[in-house]
Length: 563
Image 1 (cartoon, rainbow, N blue to C red):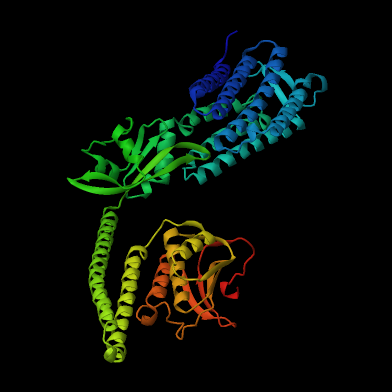
Image 2: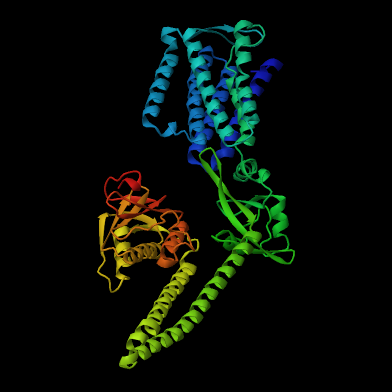
């Protein structure tokens, strides 16, 4: 059978669509994602089969064969909609393709529509035809309302798929232009379909959708890209183009896929030199695995960088990692200087305490000797010695004892009143017991009224409670109670109240009592707490700690002062 020019043009057009669709299916057979691969390959293969059936319809000499090829093509064409939605679900991560209820519904709809199409020869409601010889022998089709309903449903579902793609590209910061172009190309066959219905003298009545799918297949080669491009472009959109810090993009296989100019300049001429498309250097992997600052030589000078890692994603798909290098040289230098100053303060405190204790021990020895001399006076001078030198010696010994306590308190303060980040939940009863054990030669009773957990550094919490217990002893208290409340805790004692409660935790205002309360206030501030002192209706002294992260063992008032 010889083919005229127009007939040959139709055959060549649909033959080219067949080749394009099958080639696209072959191209995507190695796609990394199983769901995406199944959806795309089945879409392109079935579209190629659909186009091939149209070619068979055009060249078949038998009217019955032409009708058969057209009918089977309608079934295959409707199946491509399911393949398209399967691909979109896998590509965007919505997961409909794995929902068994959705799959069963899709299968039921497909089988129902296919049954209507395949039985058209019996009921004739889907389409009818006549055989026309001009400009070549072909079927002149009259499509009935079921055909247009199914076509409308098919295009609606295809549009929903594109809508999901648009949303995924938008959330990923990806250019939506290519998707819009693909959507337009896929909708182009609607025009010749309508023309063939309205003006059959201009276009014959065949299904033109395979041509649009072929154009879509070619466009998909650039939109659904290779792993390297799928990683590089979202990474640039999300990180590389928006940061001045050095950025290196690596795929899951450890291959460098992109870097900005700052990263190229940073690692140029070093052992970590990076080349796009090359494996990540072994020494670079140790740099990126570090949890703290890493040292990189820049222009002959060692600089400190903090490496942070961010996932590069497209929709639900993990594409690789972007490593950002933040120059923290100045911050690290400041931290080292602070650490040096802290060690210097520790050394000064230790040296001062040592020297002061030595002098105090010598002075205390002379005071004790003076007391013994006063005790050894003859009977005539006993009264005079006791009333003069004896009282002076006793006062001197008391002063030495207070000075020794101050030295101990200052030493503890220098060691403990520095910022700490090592906090964790502590049982208040355990801390209270440890603080009580440090009190010797005192009958003070310490009771827990309401136990619970307090987020604190253990040693500092024990020291704080110890200072509060010491204060209670100094105020002649016989009993102390501790209660854990919501956002705080209280320590009460039944000793003599202070006259100036407002300045109790300030240095230089409670010399007669030592600096224990002031140290307690400093230890509280280290944790971000606030201490206050007041007296309840029964005359008991209450020390309230607020701003504390606590977990009482039972319901507690929101305000510790109400306990």
